[in-house]
Image 1 (cartoon, protein in one colour):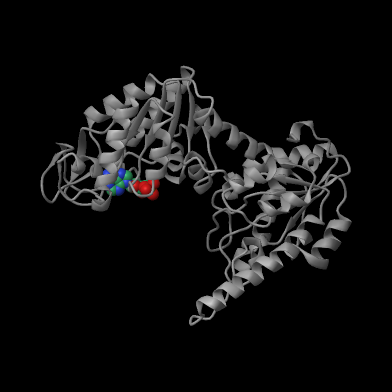
Image 2: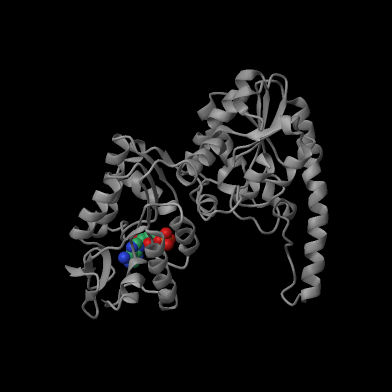
Length: 420
Ligand code: AMP
């Protein structure tokens, strides 16, 4: 596989697929530019070699063609500021507008193309179907867009000599610019960017070449959204810590009284299977034993520490209790490889952040003692940032869905398209 470090981009025009799907406020100002910053090393390497960079990205979820609020022109000024040079903009991602802008692009220059998702062909999904469309109409529309997607992909590919994918956040989508386009470049002329490579390496360090003991901490609100991850991890880890709202489904599955805590009754059977499977495999499944229970879902609620399996009616567990915090922290500090996804309580409210903070601090301590730690998924990343610990862990992933699918054991189309 071609590597960006070994490639000399001198004189090349390079299509770089990035994920600049950044949050904007109502004045179209960027409120968090992490995704742009994380793509800078790739862009800078190409420019330093004497290549020119053609940036392709999506922004938001346009559903009816061009819309000003989803225009990538909103990111041009920030990118220019971060790179310290002028950045050009093409008001279309393909066709004569894009081709002319690319033709004028000189070595060392950067061009941002307009939002790729202004075309339905990027995602390959039909748009604008009538509400009363029949299944036949839908199938015909799908076929038509798949057909025109081939030409769209060719139109993008012909803009460049080299294809670089640095859009890990979109790597779980088999879209024109994230996967299909790679087939139109020879294996020497397509590669991961630095961010994509780092993300893939981090996950593989946890799932494939991990140093033991390996600990996964899975939290958040729902068992149902994390069950595939839990099942895939059971054969790969030594310890699995289940925290957050989802732990109450496990408490109920063991016959506990959980008051009005979060619970998915249709996942109780699944929770029992997970507990049995972990025993079978010799995996240490750690569940919280106590919680901070509240009389309402609010920061000014009255609270009491309860046994996780004996919560009074009308009370709900919104955070881990002190005994659970101590036990979880010990397991984490004894680990050599750590994966964390999902908070241990309603950390957005100061009153219920202790469990999540304890986990973040234990991971930081384990990391300072030589463990490798990967933090991923929107809420755990928000938490680690909130506690100011993001530079005390080994790797903070930029990928939400993409990271989770990789941990579930799926082959990501964007990764496969380059690596085979
Ligand atoms: P998820 O989106 O499934 O990863 O869950 C993240 C959300 O779970 C966060 O917004 C937390 O506030 C919430 N959460 C964590 N623990 C609990 C709990 N014990 N009860 C209710 N919500 C929780």
